[in-house]
Image 1 (cartoon, rainbow, N blue to C red):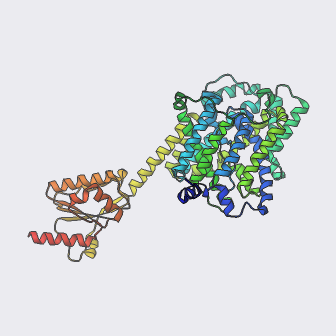
Image 2 (cartoon, one colour):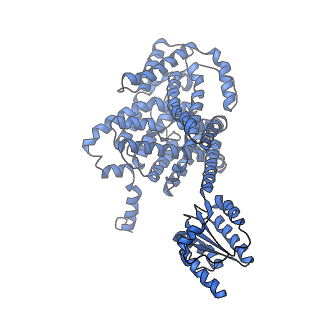
Image 3 (cartoon, rainbow, N blue to C red):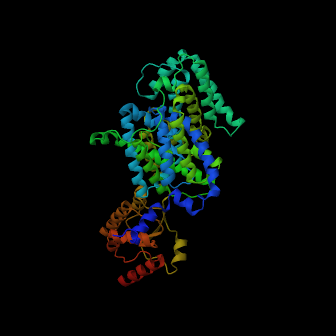
Length: 564
């Protein structure tokens, strides 16, 4: 078969890439030479900013510092080429630290890479079956709660390197780690604390002095030069902790995968995939607002999935969209995927040419950088603002998700948060359903000829679903036995699920047993079709329930007179 001659194959292939950032940038003319310089400069700046962050996030996740750089390189290129956002920068992020550190502690680096690879496949499938829009249904209290919880975990997790502590082995639970760190705090290492405090001061103050130089990079350079010159004894560095950073990239490969290992890592992989989807889509939404653009969420998931599949093959681990680096990209003039690719190539050149210089980088400066990352991630003002002003149920949901994230597990926190949010939503929706009897005045307006004897007319307003079925049954169960005909107006019912239809069927059966009947009217075409497919119209003896109340009452009045 001639592939190019087959227009259907060509169309499918074109559609598969039409929503990628590269295709969109090409169509918008953003890949022309006039836009090249600004994107090259922006990519260079973002690459320099990403260097200390990539190493810090890797170490905090239980990996080696160079693995964070590998992740940033691979994710930066792959998502820029196959994602949908024009300016999003992907790589290791702080949001992943809590879950990745847990996976590494339990399953080792090999387990972390396998879980990342599996998460990439899950993300890719989510994008292919178009689940990008579903992720946006996770409510704000849940996202804010677990993000703030992750920030607290990151902050506490850096005490060891910030203060130069040697805490006793305390187990895996958060409160046990805090107790061990507090007990070790009086034995802090003074030179380490001085380097960490100085680095923290630089990261906080430098942006107020100049925005041309990335504050994390300034802190990294100053702290490294200080340690290289004074050689403080006892200060942990990348050289003493990891033996330095090797020049070049690792060989292509993935740890051995077995069926048992896949089953063991399935839960963590789904957690990584869900968190990665949320973070990457939030990042894309933020970047859209900054450049007045509109990304394709499904294509973005495809790009992130491919990045997480390729990253472990080249020594990296899980990656997602990084909001801070994306914002830096936009502020530096980036407007196309070229900046994302250049940022990755900048990191590649750094690791090829300057890797030996990383041996003297103190871990304390990376801890100081993560202190600031944790503070920014916590969005403390937003968190406490929600606590003060949000509805009570949302406040409970916010704090429950936060506490479960910190003291239990991120998986449990997200699952419980989403489940409770869904239950609260269903409760609120069920409370909006109103089932009221029509007054004589209203009926006189609708039906001037009068209402047939022993006939009751009820109007239903709101969605009839399983959450509202109990309200429906309870309200109509109070009808007295003299009611011979019950007419239900469905004009304000946007949807009806099988539970509600089953309840309506039971009500109809109850009326018919005592010689009465139930009639429906004013239903939408969609509801009418559902009732017909369920077989309820046949039981009611009606062919169409979209008819008006007047038609139903006139027909019932004629039958009533005929029977007399």
